[in-house]
Image (cartoon, rainbow, N blue to C red; front, top):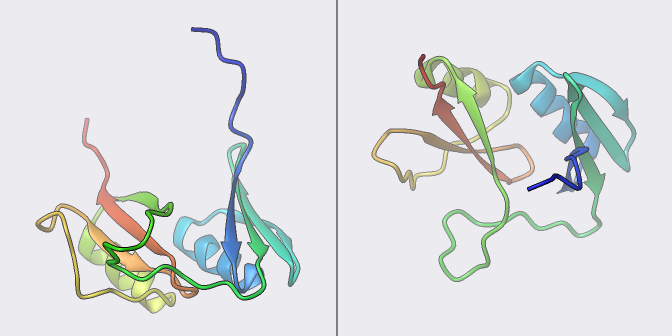
Length: 123
């Protein structure tokens, strides 16, 4: 199959784009390439994540079996325990419900969006 498109970037709804970008800058180490109250962006190696202001933004609840599934980011880390500690210090929180039997950890970013940290594949 011939590709007809390339992914340019991912844009995420946000209640505070600048703070949202600053959090993921700290977590991922990506450069903040744009930061204003209405829109912010981080980039690395030709990949970007944008954060756009949505008035009245309401984060998803975790877990919410009655709500529709939204996106979440999966981030590879070298050490789950170390990364969890660093991300909590950066402003994330850890919900009580944790699926996956310890194979990954669900955290919630400062505006309420869940994301997962997963062990980096070896080999």
